[in-house]
Image (cartoon, rainbow, N blue to C red; front, side, top):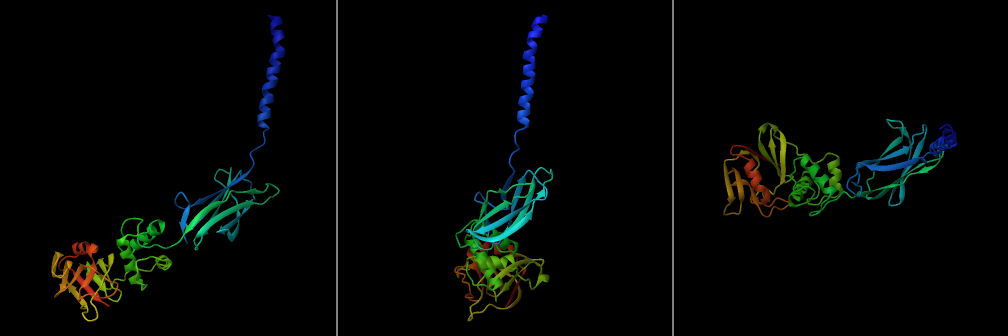
Length: 322
């Protein structure tokens, strides 16, 4: 037994020496090289897109974190440099990585590329991040078009009381909302939303000013703008385009109450009519031009007539003014 034990000692010693050598080799492996990563935030879709003028941001992450470092961020649009920023790299909550945030807002459509570089310091070498690319889309929408610009358009129109249609599509109902907005703001009376419409929305334009807030639930017809607004307790519920009386057959001005309602079509092709004085009514009709062209009534688009007819009850006011 003794001789066997003695003979095995060299083998045990070799095994004992071999294992620590392997562990030391693993521990002495060089650390991973520092890396700088970029990511675009607050952008939409798989293609990373935003609307022109929308504010988004780029997050940079440095691993591992080294105190006192900074990065230079360069922003390009269609290959042309438009901005350079130097930013400090801050520690993350764990202290294992560093980060920075850069806010970006580009008003001109195009392809925006963001690059970031850490220039060599005594503590850390030069590091170049892989760039990120974001598509800046134009602020414009035409009837039949869709996408993020239309969704933004619809959201902002609806906030003001304009009646929009299918989400993300500039359908006929949304086109009428654009037309009504243009009328209220004194813009050209078309159904397309160009950059001017988006700028007007961005600065808060297009809210209908209620002239008779004390009239409770009522309709106001502003003939100078050729729109009607459905109002309840001083708050605008809906806004529609209208066509009032032509110069030869003007719409009567004043404050009246609905005295009769007639569903369906009548002999004069008036659709779902709410009469407020004599033969004057709010009713659906085709066509409803962008100017005053009726025989004295307040024409509204046929697809909107039933909704207005249902909302307005006998005895409620209709205020007509310029």
